[in-house]
Amino acid sequence: PPQTAAKLNQLPTRQVANNFVTVMGKQSDAKKFDDARKTLDSYLAAIRKENLSAPRSASQKRSNSGAWGMNLYSQGNRGRYQQINYPSPNEYYDTGCLQLLYNAFDLHKKADLLSDLHAHFRKQIDQATGADRLYLHLALGYLYWWGEEKDLALDQMTLATQAVPGDHNLLLEVAALREQNNEFAAALELLDSITPLDHQMMQRREEAAMRVAERTGNG
Picture 1: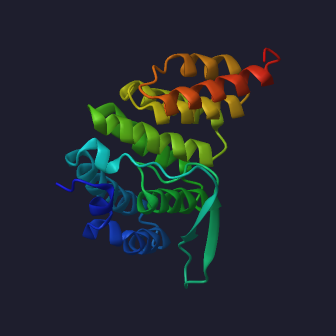
Picture 2 (picture 1 turned 90 degrees about the vertical axis):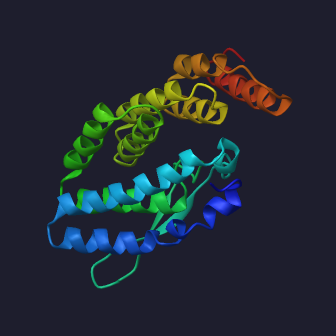
């Protein structure tokens, strides 16, 4: 298995996300949304398997948070660009995975079939075990977030953090989302659950806690 993030990103599967987006788009054009979801699953499952077979440090690099963008599928290649404010590419979902997942969201939304896509992931979560559940909770959380269903998104993100309590980056991320959603007590509870293993994480936790306290008038 690849030993570094750079080696992981050089695998052939990481170079074909655009091809999968096109296939999924054409299937959606033909109203074959079941097939489109299978295309989505096959790509996400392949990347998930590679991530899980590599040492955690190989896929652990997290991109800086902030807006980024991607090209969306459009019939006739008319060219559509979408800015994404959350999430940033990360150790679980890289740029290619997020590109495919957001395109699935966009295609289902245009067809008024988002509930089918949500149900598809909920069914997989019910059947999954171990680390697979983490990835699926994150995917469903992202879909809800993009659809402005923030409470449902945060429920899924919290379940994801419970699957990997040692991932302090993810805990900080979800705490920031709780803060953004004006759930200050829940944000502080998540921050309190972090036991920093290094000075940098301790500093990040304290800065986040101070920011939340200031917003609640306790700073």
